[in-house]
Figure 1: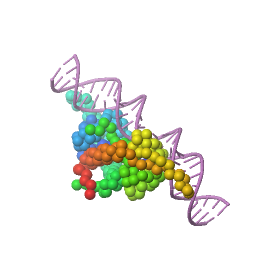
Figure 2: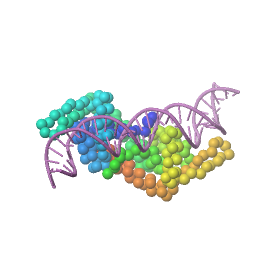
Figure 3: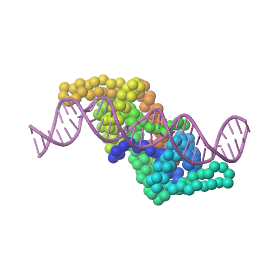
Figure 4: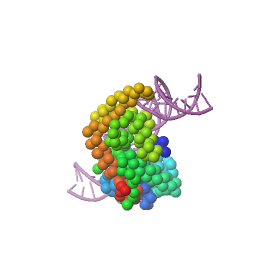
Length: 112
Length: 112
DNA sequence: TATCATACATAGATTTGTGATGTATGTCAA
DNA sequence: TTGACATACATCACAAATCTATGTATGATA
């Protein structure tokens, strides 16, 4: 029974991308846009604060990747805590999406 | 291509309930909770302002139902504009839900 | 040399839902 | 008869999350 209607899907998306391996911020944003066929756009003003919060929560860790050419990148890696957080968030999303679908009169969702 | 990550699903849910026929505010909230198996809860602080906005947008119309016993109810009816707004919102939700599912690595959603 | 992509970061504004509070009536149990 | 709970409306202060705009800086391409 959700006390609050879910917001904060951005963190879930970031964690999901990092589940496939470490990535730097800009690449995470590009990956989300690509995988969603441009349906979702992650702006800088959303991305970087969200990464900071996730790192404070120890869901992700960062390390600078200084390249010989081009700007330095901050590479994020999913922690064990982040992996279990992702599991919970995906489950919560499923509940939410099914609940919306039920009210919209679409019956249950199934993944196929 | 969404410029903004969707918020405001509450209005979609309200319109969806009213698509089944007129209802007063309190009944709308109960209906959403029931249909979602208590996964979604619509608080007064969310419900009544949302109804006011939808009425200002001419998506719904209201009329007082004064009963012989019990408090008066404001009964809302979906307008034609509201019906087409609902269609658009449901389509937007589908796009959004599929996009999230794609990033979460679940492939496409299908209703069954 | 201008524009665009890469790459990080922050501040202020806006949107939207919550929690708390208020008014009222009707029912049911202790 | 009194307290709790459901019905039924409404509003305000607050918090959370995202957006827009702005800033720095490098490299590639036209």
